[in-house]
Image (cartoon, rainbow, N blue to C red; front, side):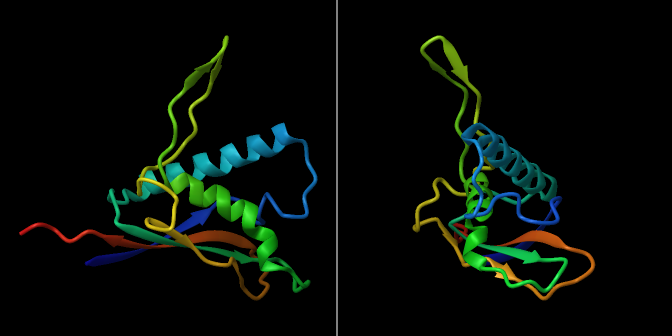
Length: 145
């Protein structure tokens, strides 16, 4: 089996969503959509081959200061990133309204454990240059010979 490791830098310096957030559901949905669109665009830009047999997703965060942080509070941001790796959904009609399409790269057919695994987010030591990035460990199916 061929294994590939891909690192995807993200534009935000700190995770935009946290388990401690209390925000309006529409604002949260807008942020989730932005995260999913960014991950999808970055995967396209890297020209990551698809389909994959299995993907392990690692979310990394390097904060600006050394305050104590709980890695599990970063789970909502990581989940939006993981959802972008799977297939999106096309636009659909709901009554009189049209629901917009949900972005997704389609690297794996679904986000269940058969195809995708995510780890606990990693928080690195502080640095003057905060950053967030994804590290994907992609396993491709064997080629028929």
